[in-house]
Image (tube, rainbow, N blue to C red; front, side, top):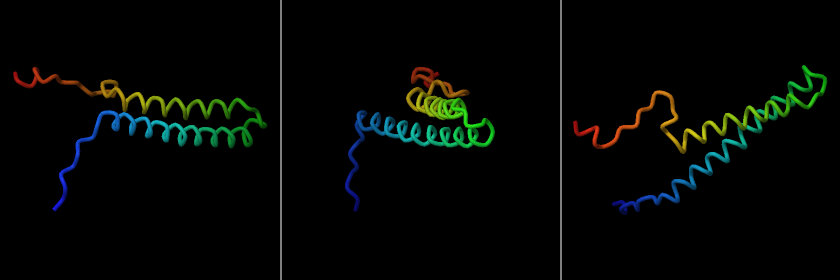
Length: 88
């Protein structure tokens, strides 16, 4: 016998989305930073711009994923259907 599950509040859903976005930013920003450091050392004679560029690319990718998480209408190919459209 399992106890009936309590519905999840909207604050909890928003909090989970923000947590995922922050974790994604840390991971993708870190990967971009690491790739920038490697590119800087190997290819660009220890310049700093590859590090900033890689970190920016990682943060931008995380921002785009977070934006899609909070606004699903921005996912290409997604159509939002209202309940009145379903009755036809």
